[in-house]
Structures are given as structure tokens and as C-alpha cells.
Length: 124
Image (cartoon, rainbow, N blue to C red; front, side):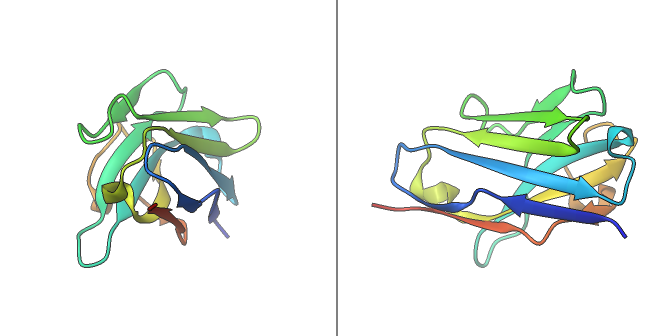
């Protein structure tokens, strides 16, 4: 079955960096647009970034543009989210998601598969 497994979360100080990785299995990875979302307690799940199948088209939420970078490796079936200049308001559970032949949607409903999430806490 399809599995998306996120890793790389943890506790980081404000201004610090983290690199999240999502490993996919059970699907033809190169046919899926991959997205990253996050959800803070009491808030809706929020779009962060998406990358289309060939890796050339990337989309970012305004809140993370310039600080977060999405990339993918179709040979390794992985998608990463490099995060710099982290702020306390970036604290959330971070999820990766897969959208079959997607165009880079920013809405939760467009995505077919989801990982279980990884916690990112930004605090001094």
C-alpha cells in the first residue's frame, strides 16, 4: 500500500534550520505532485509548498516564500523541505502529501495520500 513517511522534525531555536524528508513507497512517485502542509494546534491544515512531477515547477505559500525550499529526488522517491530562519509561529506538525498528476494545488482535498506527520517545534 502507499506509504508516506516524514522525518527530520524536532526542536530548534528561533532562527535555526531544519530539513524534512518524506520517503514514499507503494506508488509511482514520478507521477505525483508532492506537497508539504502543516497544522498547528487548533488551526486548519495549511499549505506550504508543492513540487510538480518533473521538479521544475514549485509553488510556495507567501508565509514561507524565501525561507522554505522544496525539492524532490525521483530516483530515491523522496521529497524534502529545507527550512531556514525558523520562527516560533512555524511550530506545527508537518505533513507531506501526494497528488496524482496534480498541478500544484494548495488545498487539502486535492491530495490523494498523506503521511503521519512530523513535529517541528521552534522555541528557545
